[in-house]
Amino acid sequence: MERALRSLLVQSLSVLTLCAVADFSAGSVLEGMKERFYVVPGLLTMVPPLVGLRGNIGCALGSRLGTALHLGVLRPKLSRSWELVGNALAAIFLSIVGSVTVAGISLAVRGSLGLSSRILDLLGIALISGTMAGVLITFLTIAVALLSFRRRWDPDNVTGPVMTTLGDIITVLCIYLVVLFWG
Amino acid sequence: MRFWRTVAETYSVLVACALISTFSGLLAEHHLDLFYSVPFLLVLVPVINDIAGNVGAILGARLSSALHLGTISRGQRKELYFNLKAISASSLLMYAATSAVLFLYLLVVGGSGKLALVLLVSGLILTPVVVLSSALLSLVSFARGLDPDNVTGPLITSLCDVLGMGCLLLSAGLLL
Image (tube, rainbow over all chains, first blue to last red; front, side, top):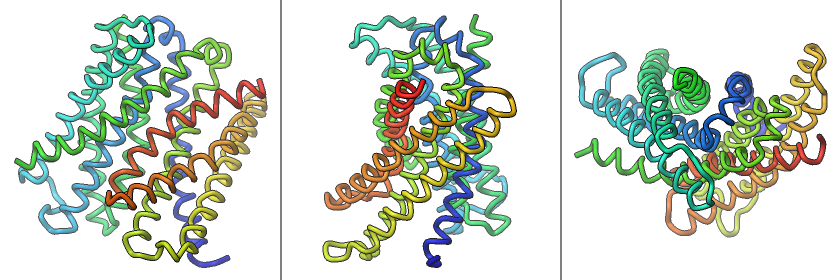
């Protein structure tokens, strides 16, 4: 086989395999909460955008940290530098605002299609689970970026796939937990 | 301030993606009875969507690099076709392997093997759709002076949520 083709297949397939394993776990959590989707109409509508949101925020944070580490603006250790704190705050802020936005979009789209939804339930579930997942994922992204850079791996190659995958599981788990206690 | 610039730039992409993904959830909720009667289909949702999303994102990133480097241009299509073929092969292999593992798992726990077939058929329908839309997004955004790195990645993952859900429902409808 051609060398370029082989390295492409090996690298992309190993990432894809890891992700597929994680996806089965995220899917099992979804399966476990199937009754809840009947109880709270609109909940299932919000799941894909909420999950995608967290992946995007984690990826953007990871790639910004990767760039800062490569440029030498950020040292690979925990510090109070604005490069680290500012980026973390931006990610958490985006998680909170983004979650409310997702709930708003779901409500607006469902409303315009004439579907009923429980506004307060959807807003509350999105806000609490989104903030929980956002904080967790922000800290995890920082840990993955700093640790991989210390081990001389390129954070740009690691944080993206790792965060989208972990983001899926963490977000679905957070939604599950919040819905469980929501009543 | 940099904080607000980061927030503003990321937020606009997030809103676009959230809007697209909402339709995936809406599609799922519309077929809630199917998911309720065959709950295992819910397990397949992240698997199908994420394999496709990853495939699309990897292809987008590779095409973007090639476009920036100039190895893909008007007269030069070899690199483009190589990527399309390699990524399609990668994607099909991935769906086939996941379906095979799932089939073995279902044999062990005594589930219906048809569910593995649903995954395989979804992958077969989805692969050409994702590969073509990712390539199209990259080429069109580059031709319009946008950076495909910023456009294809986030948009293709959201688009795959909708396309993946559609393909899952389609193949479940055909097979179950």
